[in-house]
Length: 158
Image (cartoon, rainbow, N blue to C red; front, side, top):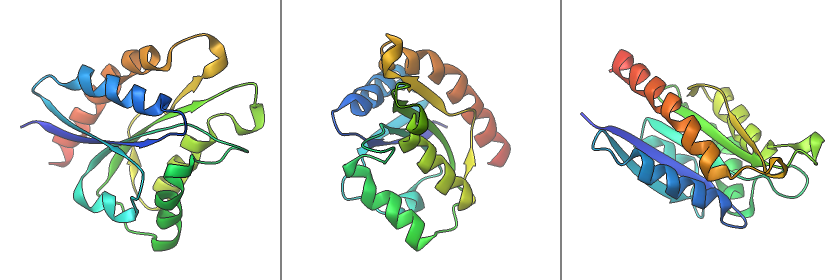
């Protein structure tokens, strides 16, 4: 049975969307069904239609989530749905030169999802834009281990 994964994208400049699209191609193996959804116009109800999610988001301004992700983030904080059936991963994009707010967009989503009972698979991937690496390549290296862990988890809970 294929694994259904929804990648939710929070982006200002398109980098997070590029990462998500790269992962969609990498995971298109017949064993995984991937849906990439920009966070534009989404609210907490997006989590009622799936069990496995990957949050792929940049950080903007003073450590905020990107503009297109704000309605979803705020909806999670106010609606406070029970996400006990949800499992997720986070790819956080940031720049270490902003040490106090490095990858905060992804870290904020991680915190609110955990508060609402969702269970994170693996560690948050924090990509540093000032490291000289391409976020798509770093995510491509990371996703193999993450998707393997997701498959194990889903089989255990199925």
